[in-house]
Length: 483
Ligand SMILES: NC(=O)C1=CN([C@@H]2O[C@H](COP(=O)(O)OP(=O)(O)OC[C@H]3O[C@@H](n4cnc5c(N)ncnc54)[C@H](O)[C@@H]3O)[C@@H](O)[C@H]2O)[C@@H](O)CC1
Ligand SMILES: Nc1ncnc2c1ncn2[C@@H]1O[C@H](COP(=O)(O)OP(=O)(O)O)[C@@H](O)[C@H]1O
Ligand SMILES: [K+]
Image 1 (cartoon, protein in one colour):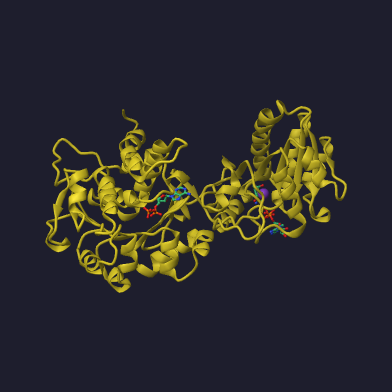
Image 2 (image 1 turned 30 degrees about the vertical axis):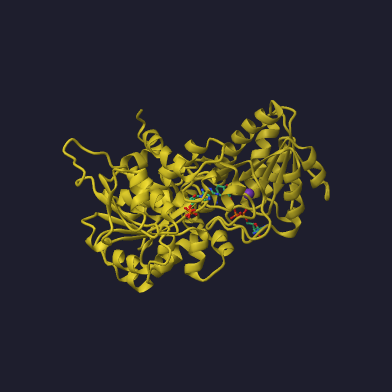
């Protein structure tokens, strides 16, 4: 499991560690890791460190100090290192001394942009976890020059200008090819839009110890998901594996029912029960489905329900499903049709799976506001509804009903932005619920497998939602390391 911690938690852990170490030791650890990563990048872009051109963008805090000490290490290996100081009177004095002693120099006022244009590597040490808001005016032209330049950009701890705790980007920020972060991931490195600014992320261990229960974010990895995915035992039968009910589709949108069932059949439940007006279309495509036209209450036992994909205006079915004493996943039209009081009153677990537009409608804000503040939005929805919430998008977030770390999933690909792929996800996750996973585990493991399936199906070319469903077994095998 990959975890990310808030700035406050990082600061506390840093203080504790610093009290036990000689002064400056932590910064030296950070600088050593940063310099090693920069040397690798220089090997790729300039062929070697010796003789390469490195520009350090140095702000007024310790983030700039890291950049200066790393720059000193590169200068000792023969790189031509020049520091551009954003506030010369407040630059880290120890780091500046080290850089000068190693043969590095400080740029003359106004020379920054020209230097960046000719550089092989730009090291962004403008601001790290001490940053507030977007880049300040004096840093904006430098960030723009770095973007124009053919130089590689390595961000120190965080791309300057992004919010470490939320992933929000208000105003200008540095766009990095690589971010070298210290001690732990910060939430902003894992959540869009900031995640995109970070490029790839490398974690340098500086010896911080962080409490397991204080993580802000958790990102499942293959091994975590492999442990969660249900696998039938020798004594299993279809009922013991769980039956998932799918109440979806309408005369207008029969395809949503077919796609939700296609996901459900690949999600680990022993049987899929379909309820709704698209039974013929479902059976034609998936004859193994148990189809009923009696409505959710009389359709027979299920261990979990999925309601809402393509449901049109069928509020009665949504209400009937919400009255069931089993886990319920509410998606798409179901989110609009569900009575908020009925959702809050449920005693069995509930998982809501909006995309940003649906989340915006539920919260009464704009889509852009949700996309700009995903973490706050998913937590707010979970709190309001007393339900788990899976917010879809480029990084999918899953918040539990009672707080705790939010799960983040980044296995997806933008090729998944295709009509109906969310219906496949809802069926898949519903099936995992029926198999007995908790709402947060089902949502995050389902999003993981679905994202991977999207990648496998697309491989760089457009796909339809049914291709994603077809790729789920391959993703599942990949996660389990079989086949
Ligand atoms: N505390 C420690 O022991 C360690 C800290 N490390 C580094 O130290 C950083 C934190 O250092 P600081 O607490 O000094 O904080 P930063 O260096 O992140 O930033 C603080 C400074 O930036 C200015 N600033 C704030 N917002 C700005 C903005 N939007 N644009 C431009 N300037 C802005 C502030 O006026 C302040 O002077 C970490 O991100 C990491 O890089 C590492 O060396 C590891 C060890
Ligand atoms: N840019 C993106 N990058 C990665 N995944 C994405 C992106 N856009 C959408 N997705 C994923 O694709 C799926 C789309 O679901 P949704 O928006 O509900 O579509 P639909 O309602 O058409 O089924 C979700 O799993 C979502 O996380
Ligand atoms: K930085």
